[in-house]
Amino acid sequence: MTAKALPPPEDEVEASRAPLMDHLVELRQRLTRILIAIGVVFCAGWFVSQKGLDILLVPFSDSALRHGREGTEVVFTAPLELLFIKLKLSFLIAIAVTFPFIAYQVYAFVAPGLYRQERAAVLPFLVVMPVLFVGGASLVYFSVLPIFMDLSFDQEFAGAAARVVYLPKVKEYYDLAISLLTAFGLAFQLPVVLALLARAGVVSASGLRKGRKYAVIVIFIVAAIMTPPDPFSQFILGIPLIGLYEAGIISAALIERGRRRREAAEAAAEAAEAGEARTA
Image 1 (cartoon, rainbow, N blue to C red):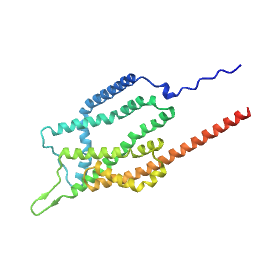
Image 2 (image 1 turned 180 degrees about the vertical axis):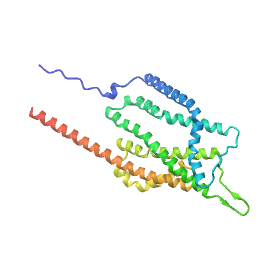
Image 3 (image 1 turned 45 degrees about the vertical axis):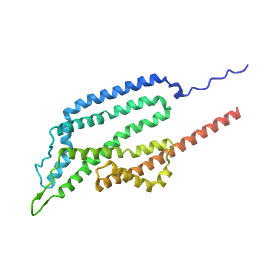
Image 4 (image 1 turned 135 degrees about the vertical axis):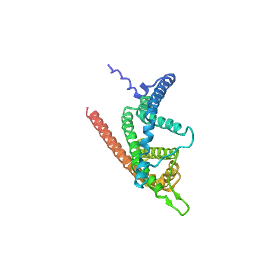
């Protein structure tokens, strides 16, 4: 009597496959949730936008005090200029606050197409990304912006004809602060990007080490694009990016070491099973 052959185990990705229309319906639902969340937080952000702008102005006011400019004003000249600044700030607050929710919705949509170990590998990066963004933004707020303001006030002088002083417009200061916060926050995602590429097998630690000199050139080109057009801001973003590139190399090396360890363990388990089968 012959034993009945068991059917092959069903692939977990194939098991989660759904018709295209179901995917489109789910995508619409998740996009709707994201837009509703952004809209609700945007409305709430409007009520704190003036306080948020006041917080953004702290590095300017502290620098003004350090240079003996107590009571220095930041001006706006267009009739609705400050209104549009508050609207843009409300939108940025909405994006920042809802980012974990947005990331979860994106992950929940693509998760059925991933294997279990792939889902487990992606989850830590969802936690690390906002932490790195906050780290980059904090560097700007507590270090870069004060240096910018100090350099600006240092240019003041009392000439023979008139006294030249620094009196910024609120829009120019806001645009500078937001562009730097965004640039540093996004740039600090470099280790995550390199780690994901290494996990996917696109890059390797040895390849990243060999391409280090080219990476430095690319980093400063990217820094020039992402920051205001002055050498100082490009330099002050480029240096941390080089450090983050090195952190990406370390992450790639750790991922490769873990992969080799798993492959060795799987090979040993297969060899043990084959040995047991031969002795049976």
